[in-house]
Length: 333
Ligand SMILES: [Zn+2]
Ligand SMILES: [Zn+2]
Image (cartoon, rainbow, N blue to C red; front, side):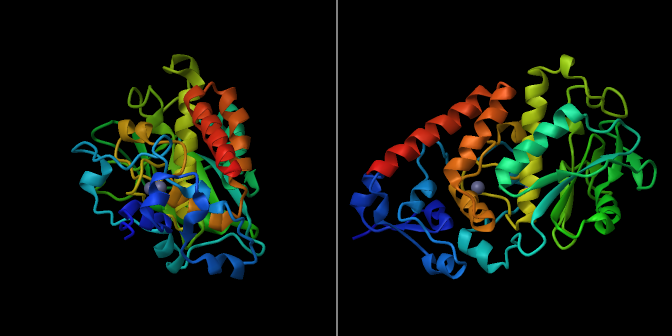
């Protein structure tokens, strides 16, 4: 008799038909995709070995760890969102004219995000989502948004919800979404200490902050970008910025926080937790994004390599290379 699928496997939307399949992963064709017919209705042919991309092999995908007392999953009630639940939630897809992602640099009383970070961020988002990503002209919102000095960090913060309201009319006609990026610290509501980012799905916009990713955060009321004084230099900042950007834009595709695997879509409560979060999507979240953007998974992985190599992100490059080699092996079976 077939074993019951784990919570994780059910979330991906793949079932394994026998114990034999379970123990011999290369025989991927024995995996059956739930809702396979939904793909053909969308006019997208599913390659026979498509399912191999979503086999949660532990070398690349680890089940979500319990985490520490102050971590997101310990503080927030998250029920997770399976692939099927995501589809049924009326997931947001880029279609018609609304097929581009826009990055909008926002500044308040601090400096805008530097071009040397913004340009490669755009390039990474372009590859990550495989839809066009464009940079909008930066906006200075000095004192136009409710603000405060945070009593714990002594930093200048702006109300993220109000920023989203201001951004709404700026959403271009061909935008799937606009992601505001700022070096200013954010808060979502008066009672909250801070937030890394906030999204308004209905308004097709989100905003996220790099303030807390810089080592001089809290030393002065506004955060200053000084790559020379950062441990790990530019690459640490770039990786953190990529993760937050792709996580926040991921929410715009209707992806909820992931509770199944260590994944880019895991919620995060603090810097240590967001640093521990992978740069890549787990099989559950990858399946959702692939369904949205219809990309070639191997080609997407391949295109990420040169960008990450530029920033010396060796571990991530290695993840991609070994993953690609593995997928190549599965092709031959
Ligand atoms: Zn989130
Ligand atoms: Zn995930």
